[in-house]
Structures are given as C-alpha cells and as structure tokens.
Length: 389
Image: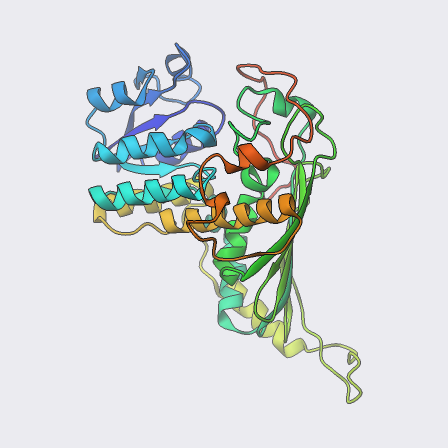
C-alpha cells in the first residue's frame, strides 16, 4: 500500500484526493499539508480524508511521515522548491501544472529527480481524455495526411474576483496569466500531438481584468517546418467553447469530434461529396479505440502510481512538463519583445532564468485585492472539460 501526502489543500486538491480514492486498493492518502495555519486540518472532511494527519510545512510532513509519493497542489511559484525538497528526501512527486514558472526551476526539479532516482510526473490530465486520445490516434495513423494548419482555442472565462485570490494576478506569485495557467493544457496537447515548433510569434493583452498585472488573452502562431498552429489563450470567452481543429492534407479532424475530407475536381476545386471513403476509415478507427479505464486526474494518478511501483518513467514526466513551460516562455518573450522567437530556448537566454518575467513583463494593471480564499466550487462551462485552477 503506497502512502501518499497532498501538499496544498486549495480547490485543485480535491481532484487529487478523488483520484487517489479511485485506487484505494493500491494507495492511501495519509497526510495533508498547507502553510496556512489550520487549513490542512480544516479541509480533511471536504477532501474525504477525515483520518489524514495535518501539517503546516513540507519539512514537518517529510520528517514525520514515511511517504512514497506527494502531490503538490500549491501556487506555481512554490512548485520547484517543494518538489526539490521532496525529491531530495527520497519521495516521488506528482506536481500540478504548470511545472514551474521558469525553465531554470524546471531543470532544477528534473536534476533532483535524476540525482535521487525518483519519479517526477507533471499533471497534464487532458492527455487522459478519450476525446483527445482519439484525436492523437487518428493523427498518428496518418489517415489525415501531413498536418498543414491547426487551430487551438483554449477558451476559458473567469470573473474579476478570480484574480482577488492572494497568489493570482501577479507575475511573481502566479508566474503568468491565462497562457501559463490555463492554456498550458492545450499547449501540452499540441506538443503531444504535433511535437515542438521551431519558432513562435505572439501578442498579449489584458482585456477584462483590471485587478491583475498579467495577461487574460494571448494569440500565438507556432511555426513548424511546413505547418502553422494558431493558439488562442483566454479567460474572457463566455461559454468556454474549446476546440482543436487539425487540417491535414487528406482530411480535417477536430475535437469536439468532426471529420471532413475534401477531394478535388480536375480543375482543383472541391468535388461534391468530398472523400467519403477516407471519412469512413477515420470514423472506423475512432470507433474501434478502447476507452480509457480512468480519465482526467484519476487517469494520470493511476499511471503515476504504477510508475512508482514499477520504478519506470511515467506517461507525463518532467521533460514533458518542461516542454510546455518552454513553449509558454517563448510565447511570453515573443509577446513582450514583439518579435519571433526561435526554439529551443538556450540556458543563456535571459527568459530561461527565474525572475526575468517579473523584471520584464508588462503590468497591464495593478492587483487591487488580495484575499486568502474565495467561496464557490471550481466549475467550467464546457461539458467535456477538466477543471483548471
């Protein structure tokens, strides 16, 4: 029976607690930790963990408990320090997205995991969705042909009060705005399906949240060798209608699910009826795919538990988490400097290091409120989405 600790008992901790509960025959959450005095103890019943022991520092937690794995569900600016502390103590780590606000911090986490022979997994729960796994399988099959164009809409909506929470809305504590903390889900999916682009250009703005320094809207163009991907990152889109549309040479496939395959007349114009045979082959491949046993956080937690037991690489490791942060960093640099940024980013790039965004990013507005907690549940507008912090 693997012993689990959860560090950070805010809203997203519930997804971790529920995920571990799905594997109650394999693991037990024995401890909770939160730096706010009394919060970990006060959250035990909400998290369905009345018998979990409560601590107020990770050092106290690690000294008192013989843990196999910790979930880190704290603000982004704390991820690296907490993860490195746990890894150096010989405990495996599952850390919430984003992995960390800077590549320097990501590399410190990866180095600590390697040095101490520990498992490090970064939450990317949307890879564990049947719809996204289906899209990837179709793209990997080659039936759509080489990719030409991708439209990614990471559309979320948050009211102004969202940024009143103490750690949100500043470059220092949140690490960024919607590009880092919301669209990282879709950016990770883009990397998973298409690989890394060779260059990025972007624009950033704050369109609707006057109580936050950070961006609430960005539009980026990712340049591949023979393809372009447009990524809209937003917390200003009513209804949160998210989508990924991939145009291949032979067909278009999208989630929400849609398949279209055109065929040409001798003059190059579209033929009536398109290519129904190719559509049928893609639909058949999608229909034959076996559904995942567990989805979302539970799916990733199940894989991480197996990786801990088997001492293997998890499905989403530190390198995967780092790639997503690298792409976000390139988007920020491109938007701040108003230029095209080549990838990969080198360690001597100023945006590689911790603190550069704090120094160079624009303050679209100044943070005007700072509260310890906000009432209400974590909800999203679409029916097919996983909650984001």
